[in-house]
Structures are given as structure tokens and as C-alpha cells.
Length: 278
Ligand code: NAP
Image (cartoon, rainbow, N blue to C red; front, side):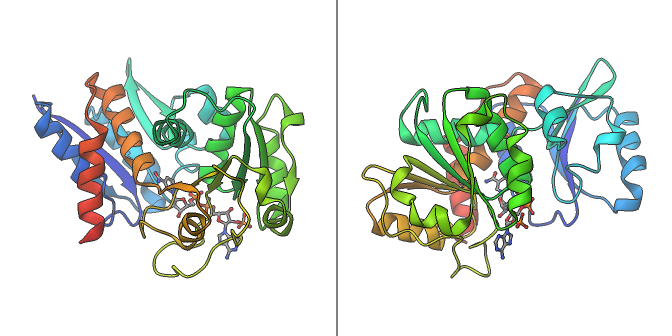
């Protein structure tokens, strides 16, 4: 019987996950179909119950339900429990278990593009303290051996993030102004705010003009493919990455979790690039 997977959000029509998931199922002979589900907030509980009643074995969760869905799930992974946000759900022994793959997917994509196995003792600057930043910071803190400074417009949100780490001494919360003035300190800068996202593509949260030699700048935004901060980073000689590989990695991780199939993330990345360039 064909399995049904999907993504739940509102709005959902711009999601690229149906395109890349369905292509991966076809290429890997996975007998499944991936459907976008647009859900009204007032119907969230009924929607989750309905998904379970229909036997849907897995689905992704996106804006605005990453936190709101938690009361309707049966269990959370330790990471999702800590950051109180879920973006992937799996049916295990009749229970819906919530996970958050943002951080894991980002770190996997970063290590691949930096061609490294570990960020040991590297200095990382995390720009932003929203949902994606939480998961990325939690993942970096789990690594245990990385120095991560956090800079966000709302400092209180950055300060709250530090509570996700067991090793708070490795993190300083700094203003965006200070982050800009000491940018040459960082080996890796990860941009997780929504600044620079289409259609307001001319903005960046800080100006990059004095990067450390060999610095790597990662922006988790994937539309546009080159944000203003990545343009500045490239002009300063940095290696850069946009958010497409992170998005592909999320989808690869989901398929592996739900079906046990390991699919090719490069093929997904190619499909994403083509879709976003059109
Ligand atoms: P979010 O929870 O709404 O957080 C937004 C962040 O942007 C906060 O740090 C917020 O600062 C900051 N921000 C927004 N407008 C700002 C402004 N005008 N000036 C200064 N700071 C501003 O969003 P999210 O879910 O983390 O997503 C953030 C971005 O990541 C989006 O572009 C999303 O598409 C992208 N994303 C990509 C992937 C991927 O797979 N590549 C996955 C998840 C998210 P305050 O705290 O001060 O409000």
C-alpha cells in the first residue's frame, strides 16, 4: 500500500518539500506520496488527530505550528523538548513523536561544505535567536567543544538561548554592533535572521568588511540564493553557503527516519536550485 507523508503549515503552497520528496520517492522506488497540508490554527488539534487516524507515518511541520503542535503530540525527542519546537513528526508504536532537525541539518550541510568533521575550538558567531537559531545553537552546544557568540536585535531572546547549553562559558551574548566590530574573531558566521530574505533582499543584519582570513559564512536563507550578507562575505574573500543544502539535508533526514532509505542529497539540491532559479 502506498504510504502518505506530508508537510503541515499555513501558508504551505510555496513549500518545496513536496517537489523534492516526491522526486526522491520516485528515484529510489519508495512507494509513497508527499502532500502539503494547509491547516487553520483553530483546527490544529483535529488535524493531528486526523493524521493519526489515517495512519500517516510522518510529516514535517512548518510556520506557524512548530511550537503550537507540541500539546497534540505524544512524545518529544530530547532536543525538541529542550527548544520547545518541532519540525518533524514520526508515528512510532501508535505515538506521534516530535523532533527538530533544523540544527542537525544545518551542521551536516556546514561540515560537508567546509570539508571538516568537527568544529572543535572554532569561534562561531550566530546571528539571530529565532526558531531556527534555537535549534542550531542547541546542536552546536551538544558538540561541546565550540565557542559560540550570539547576536540578535532582541538581546533577551539571545540570553534565553544560552540556557540551552550545558557549557555557558563558551557563549557570549553581544549586540549586533559589537558583532560587526569584532567580526575578524570568527571562523564561522551563521546568519539565521529573516533579514535579506526575498523580497527585501538589499538588507543584512551586520556589514561584513573585515573578516578573518579563511572565514566561512553560512546563511540559512535559500531565497535568494545569494543574500546581501553572502555577497559581502564573498567580496571579503570568505567561503559561503546558502540555506539550500540545509533544506535538502532536512528532507534527506526525514526520508531516512520515516522509510529507512538513504537518498542522494546532491540530486535534491540540484532540483531545489532549478526550482528556485525559475
Ligand atoms: P523566527 O523565529 O521568526 O526568527 C526571526 C529572527 O530574525 C529573529 O532573530 C529576529 O530578531 C530576526 N529579525 C527579523 N526581522 C528583523 C529585523 N528587521 N531586524 C533585526 N532582526 C530581525 O524565524 P525562523 O523560523 O528562525 O527563520 C528565520 C529564517 O531562516 C527564515 O528566513 C527562514 O526561511 C529560514 N529558515 C531556513 C531553513 C532551511 O532549511 N534552510 C530552515 C528554517 C528557517 P528578534 O528576535 O529581535 O525579533
